[in-house]
Structures are given as structure tokens and as C-alpha cells.
Length: 211
Image (tube, rainbow, N blue to C red; front, side, top):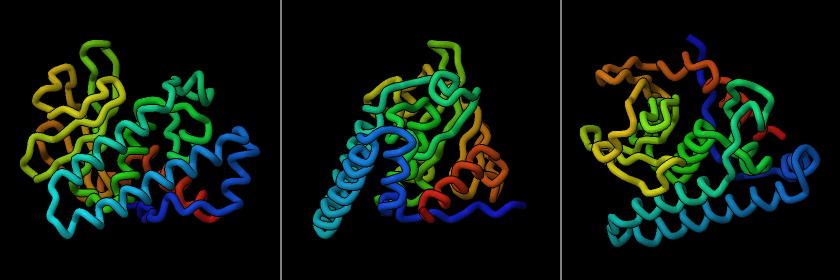
């Protein structure tokens, strides 16, 4: 089985990376990355301050701010934006190009929340069928406990709601760094490495960090 790269420190941008996105995308691209970096660092500082007080609201605020920030990126289909049927962009690519689709929003939220210290086992990137529009779709599910009704971070419905209230979504499969789940709840250890586009995305993240 192919090993999945371990990625951390995704907002530690080198000057080479900032120069690269400025050349490839636009002069505003580095500014958007630095806004993301500042948001992450500010939330880390806020969490550190409230953790001592045991403030349970801090994590909910982190989810909301992350969801709202990434949902500000304009939506574009992969064909319109990248000239490909299915392209999974890194958060650097999504913010620098100022465009994303459902996979990109979900990936950016997942990686941001991991960067903020939320364990991967609480997060699942989830493929669904969006019944209201009759299309495949992707969202991020957050599980405060393994058996909890997960909260859904979505770009179609901007408010974070429990999955039980999202009757418009029909799960297909979900995954995180370590596992892949079917709607039955069965999981396969190490399954995420079998998702080719996810593996390729993590490899792109590693290349970005080496710039």
C-alpha cells in the first residue's frame, strides 16, 4: 500500500512560494495567503487562551470561522477553472487563484482545522449526492464524538448544521488521513491512501512546503 505523506505547518509560507503564486496567479495571491495565515495564527492564540478556562464554545467558533473564511472563495467548476474534469486543489491553489469547487472547499477546511489542532479522527471529507440539485457533492463532517451526529461544513448551505438536518444529502463514502468509510459505517484502515486524487493532493502540499 502506498504511504500517504504526512503534512503539517501548511501556513508556514516561504518567500519562494509567495513569489511563485504571485507569478502564476496574480499579485494579490500572496496577500490572500497571508490573510489565511493570520486567521489561523489568531485562532490558535484564541484557543490557547480559552483552553485554560475549558471554554467549549471555542471549538464551535473555530469551525464557524474556518467555514466562513473558505466559503468566501468564489465557486468555479474544475473545467472552467483548471481545464480538467476533476482537479483537487490545495488551499494555496484555491486561495491564490481565488476559485474553488466543492472538493476544494472541503479539503481547505479539513487541512485548516487540522492545522488548528483538531484531530483527524473527528474530521471526514465526505462525498454525498446533493439531492436538491441531483449532483455529486463534497462536504466536511465534524464528529465531536465518534458516535455523534456530525456537523456539516458545506459551501451550498453556509450555516453549519447537524447531518440529521441535512436530508438533502445522501452519503456515498467518506475519508480522512487514515480511513475510508462506506455509508454502512464500516471502515478500512489506511483506506485514504487508495483515493488517488487525495494522495496526489498531499504530494502537492509537500512540494509547496519545499519551495
